[in-house]
Image 1 (cartoon, helix red, strand yellow):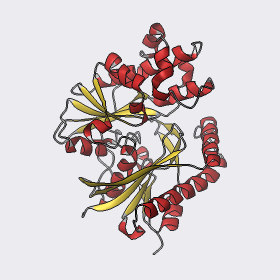
Image 2 (cartoon, rainbow, N blue to C red):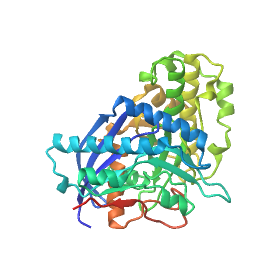
Image 3 (cartoon, rainbow, N blue to C red):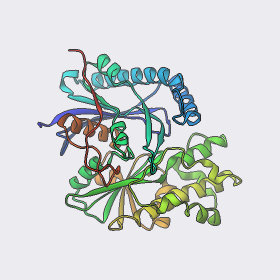
Image 4 (spheres, rainbow, N blue to C red):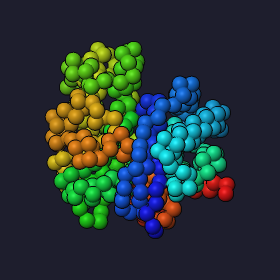
Length: 374
């Protein structure tokens, strides 16, 4: 397939009120050029609507009819993201006809991993056809469902893109990519043809929730609160004994499988310090599971901006951690770029999930292509 310009969209499970938009030129195998990118804010009322949809999803848990709020939030989210893309095109003097596809991840409200005897489930809010009709561009969406219907975890899907980025910087098996969003995930590449990936554990999610629970803001800016606290080492040791952390991969997590309740009873500062140490500790346990334990991590996602997390990775995970920008990756854009890349792979009929990433029996494609009205 000839290289194409594709736009990717991502909104993370931390519900930070931002839409990540990024454009790359790719054939679904190689990344040829990096186009413009931006972080676009959601309307304030939409952020509240999505928060309520997540809250109701945690009560619903795939039992019975979907909460009616899902349909309302899905329409509002799809329109808001379509409008953000339209503005992005205008700002960058791009025409819809120059873009082959938009990779629209949607908003995850609930994810349940498979267990023996039961397939997993996932729900991302996002109406790809509505977006395609608004923009006049084909939209690829619902990337995870087909994988889960085939017995996979539906996550992480970023592995093939992370591997493409690792190839660009000529990394080998001693270097891995780590994304720290609401949940963490790691991608390891053998330097040749094989890559493996899985969710490491919680990342920013519980820390953010802990800070908000105490009315101290929406996140631990610059890790300042954690750095004033003291880690409860006994509690941390118990937390790191969680069976998920030693389980073989493929494996995946929901944003709320690990919560801020892990720090109950601690002060604001000590709780933040303990949760931060736990995030880093889960990464360390994860690196122990890989075929070759990396000595260096290239970190993308919001967690790379937290100096307390980055320092804890060195101390607790025993690994050198550098931000994405150290190797000329666009740390805030990587996840959105990933879904532009996956959209191109879907259009090319290439697989987006693999036995060593999501656990499907054989590499498989996925996603739904919504064609715009011509």
